[in-house]
Image 1 (spheres, rainbow, N blue to C red):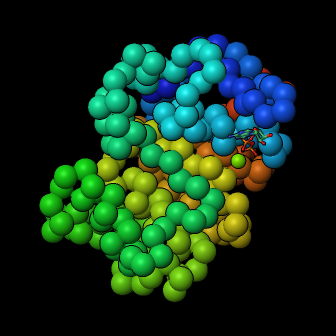
Image 2: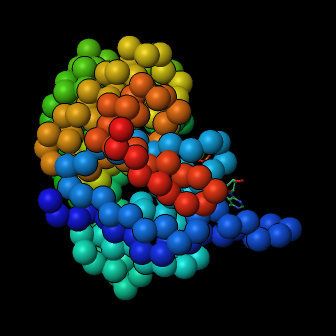
Image 3: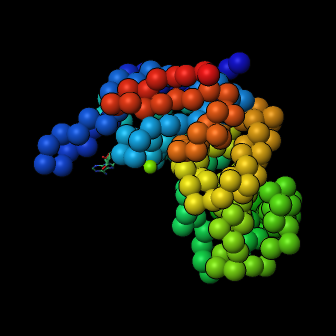
Length: 225
Ligand SMILES: Nc1ncnc2c1ncn2[C@@H]1O[C@H](COP(=O)(O)OP(=O)(O)O)[C@@H](O)[C@H]1O
Ligand SMILES: [Mg+2]
């Protein structure tokens, strides 16, 4: 299997009153088609790690390779292309634009890459059908359940067919059955040879991933059981 992300000696520190070493010389490789659970207590650095590999933040040290290419050597245009089309991130909440319908929220992500509106609307409808919210196209986020909002957010995250989907506690505010539905979407993406990393506190879902990455004291440990 080929590599989607590889990090070499990746470190991240924040400086407040004193230096906080959040990630310390992490070395891992993520392959295409892998579905990975990212675990660790609150404040351990899960979001920090996801932001780094989404190229939304700069490492303090070390290198991130995307599809074999050093991201530190990409220019802004290349980075924007990777961020816009190849990597997508979903958060626990506040994902959607409140003044836009489900359909618009999803279609906008595609229109912003230069596709025409009609085409984007059609694609958005297809994806929303895939995530099971085809009957909610004209609803505004406030008129959707939390689970539906999250599915629309995931539809938006995948409309441009990213190779890497990062989800930061995507089921944190969902009940078990809705969480399972989200996980089933991840399985679908995996079957399309995409890679998914989801931060979670849900042990049951984590156990169904291909493997777990656990952040402990700034290090990442892989466990396969
Ligand atoms: N921009 C920042 N400036 C200073 N400290 C930060 C910043 N972002 C995160 N941190 C700190 O880094 C640690 C890890 O945060 P985070 O990655 O959000 O953890 P998690 O997602 O695992 O709960 C926390 O102690 C947090 O306070
Ligand atoms: Mg977090």
